[in-house]
Image (cartoon, rainbow, N blue to C red):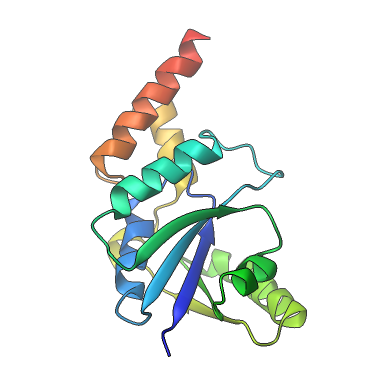
Length: 164
């Protein structure tokens, strides 16, 4: 039986830390679905279509990765995908409390779905989409943190916002 993991997130934008986790997850799981959340509580820089396009672009070399979006409860999405695993990254102790709470809530909602936590590569342990956006918004280079296509899209988006 194939194992499918759902890797949910806003991916606003996707970083090398996200890609590292996806590639390493493929060593454990047969399939990884990168599920871009359409979270109404957050105000992403990129809309859902833009985020989907970037994630698809930077994962196109990975045959066992699919990219999708969702705006339902995560456990409902996982069930609809016929998966049993939620994949989450833990960068620091500060991530743990929130992720632990979410994992327990998801288990309460569906005790057949497991949450698996993976640690990032040490080189990406400090990296977050929020920090990447902050650096880019202040004119700093983010080329060490995101793939070229994402770096270019960030520059375009910020130029577009400044023009308006």
